[in-house]
Image (cartoon, rainbow, N blue to C red; front, side, top):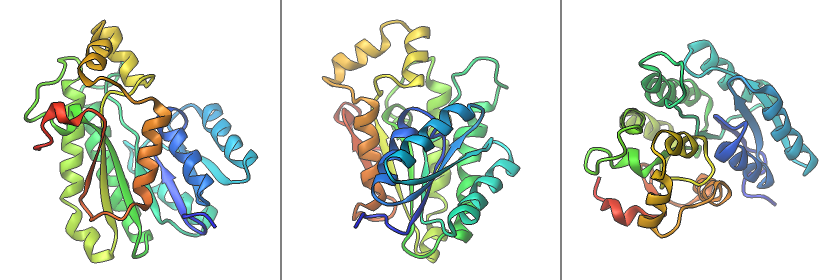
Length: 249
């Protein structure tokens, strides 16, 4: 018996990287998984194919979470495909991409997170779990300066975390718990690659400070653990290197 048998999970931004690995782990625990992508359907379909090949259940759903239509279609896909929604992993984030509108980071990292959760709440039964994925650089941005290139993203992700925490009373009424997972820079992610491109040596410097940076697979395993961990709602799980930031925020 898997820990998530007969449960359904949505993992936002799960066509690659951390989200894709989390989706595979949750499927391995028995969950039916909604794999979300914004534009790259072939990548999402490959994740679904990998899950199905391993005996799991999954479906790929294209949805731009910065639109209300996208949020609603993703939430309803879980019910239409699998008949329930018990786990929501808020992994999608961005803001360092080129060619996006000026307030894109805030729209995705704050507004879309809140809209997605609000769309999911009415569908989630008591005992459901929401996991928000963030970075130490964002979680501690008010007290520990981050790289200038990353600051707008960090501040928008912190705004997203604060807004989600503002919904804790609503979640408590429904018996739904929220856990925040904060990680250091992750080797091999898009954010790390873009940061290193705009600030060469930034990742190497952070690696030297932290002693070790987690890989995508290692961090995804920690995120997936928090889906079933016995922790209080509002708990922050720190993954690697948080002592440098003081763990005070």
